[in-house]
Length: 289
Image (tube, rainbow, N blue to C red; front, side, top):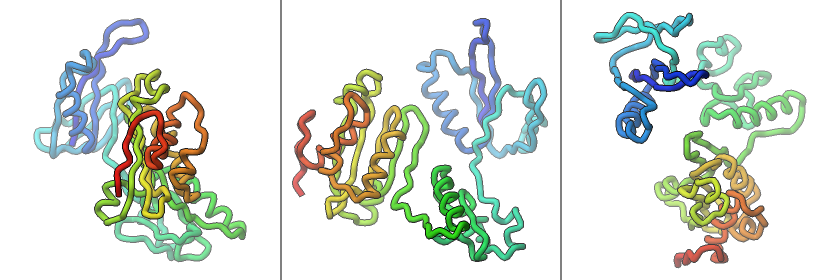
């Protein structure tokens, strides 16, 4: 799937100019829809937008412009663009690095299986990061690297994190960790929920980010099992909830922790207070079990 569109901008001298952009991958569908549906709201930032299916990019050559070559139904042989966004996803390369030559087992998808020490089936070979499986996240890889290095040095170390946070760096940001509400419902996990709207948060009001929300999920034993946030800087807020899950905190533990004011971090504490029934900033009746 390809999306081609123009972007109207100004150069450093303030002169109007047009950029020609091509996007390669399934995300092109979403971008075409967004540009089409919100074109008026974008104040002329984007011009014509078109998409092509059954078309493949076969190469890109850099010069004064980026010359993109194609193949497919009615596809031009090549065309010049100012920018190319590659959004086709990625896949593990375990089968392409000769790991099997060393006796390392690689599955059909290209992933390399590891244990909690990041050790492969070959005792003295370790694997970390995307090639070792989901989730393919840099912060997971960083911690795996530490574990692998410590194990190589003979230390007793293991990768045993209870949760690994995820962040979508959009505007607004979306972040979550642990059990999601959708997962809890699907798996029949008993839970309660505390949430706090950013419209009642002073810092969010000052940042014009009042459309945000922070939500915490608690298990049947009262301990936090998951969290989610949407809004400016949501990815920064989720770290506190990861620590809370690792420490086995309950709503009172989080709510009684003094959060600085005014900050977006207060929404985490107040979501916990909403669950505990001690919130005074808003009247949110606690649902009966």
